[in-house]
Image 1: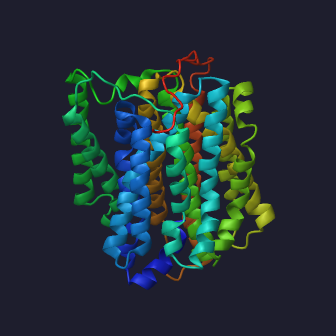
Image 2 (image 1 turned 90 degrees about the horizontal axis):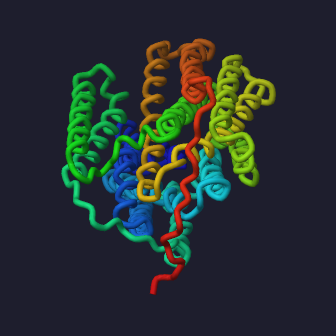
Length: 449
C-alpha cells in the first residue's frame, strides 16, 4: 500500500529518491530482523500478552507516521511499526495453531488466515492507489481502526495462556539473534545502492554471518536455548520454509519486474496495474471457503507442488509478452495461474510449517516460516534485480530493448519456483507426514477481569 504513495510522499516532504526508499526499507528492516525473536518470546512470555502489547505499539507507530512532517520522523515510525509487526505476525499465527487441534480444525483456521494474508498483496495495491488520492497520510493510518478493534476485542476473545515457567534465561542468545538478523537485513536492503560487490556489502554479510554463527554456538551450549535448531528436522518444517522462500521470492521478483516494465516502459498508471493484478487476489480470496477441504482431500505436500507448478507455467507464459501486450490474451492467463498457485500453496505451506510441533514451540515455527517468507524472498528479489540491472540498456533505449533486459529476471522467477517444486517433490517416495499432536487446551476463555 505504501509503495504506491512514495512519489506523493517524496514531493510533499521534499525527500530525495535515496532517502525515500527507507520509508519502505525501514519497515522491512524492523520486521525482518525480529520475526524469529518475536515468535519465540511469545512462546516463553505468553502469546496474548505479547500480541496485545505489540499491537498497541503498532497503533501508536501508525499514528506517528500519519502525522510525521519530516522524513526522519516518518522513517522512524515505519521502523517501529515493523518492529511491532515482527511480534504480532508470528504471535497471531501461533495463537491460531495452539487453539485449534491439528488436523481438519487447524487446517481450516490456517487456510482462512493465509487467504486473508495473501489477498492483501493484490488488494493493498488498489486500496493504496485510492487512499493516496485523498492523502498519502491515509496509507499510514488506514490499518488503525482495524487494529483498535482487535485491541478492544482481543482481551475478550483471545484465550489466556501461561508463560513458560522454570526455564533459565538465554540473555546472550536474545542479544545475538536480533543483532545478527538486523545486520543481515540491513545489508540486503542497502546492497542495491552500495553495490553487491562493494566492500561495505561484503563486510556487512561477513559481520552478519559471524554474529549468527556466534548465536549458534551459544544456543548449542546453554541449558535452555532460545531456539532449538533441531526443530528443522521435524516433519516438513525445513521443506515448508524452503518452499516459502521459493513461492514468495519468485512472486515478489515477478511483481517487481512487471511493475517496472508496465509502468516505466509502457506508461501504465499504478491503479491500472493494481486492477490488472486483481484477478489473482480474487482467486486467492475466493478460495477461502474450501481451501481447508482441498488440504484434507489432497494433502498439503501435494498442493504445495501443484501450486508452485501453476506459478512456473504462469511465469513462463509471461515471457511471450511484447511491447504492445493484449491484457486478456498475454497478461491475464499468467495472472490467473499465479493466483491459483498462491491459493493452493500458501495455506499448505503454513500447515506443513507447523505440523507436528508442540504448542510450546508454535511461535518459533511461525517465526521461522515468516522469516523465510520475508528475508528469503528479499534475497531472491535482490538477486533478480541484480540480474536485470546487469543487462539494462542505456537511457533512451527502445521498449523492446528494455523488455529484453527484463526477460532474464522473469526466467529467474520461474527457475526459483521450479527449485521450490523440486524441494517439495524430492524424494519421490511418499513423505511421512507427522501424526497430529493433540494437546488438551490449557487456556480459559475468560475476559480480563
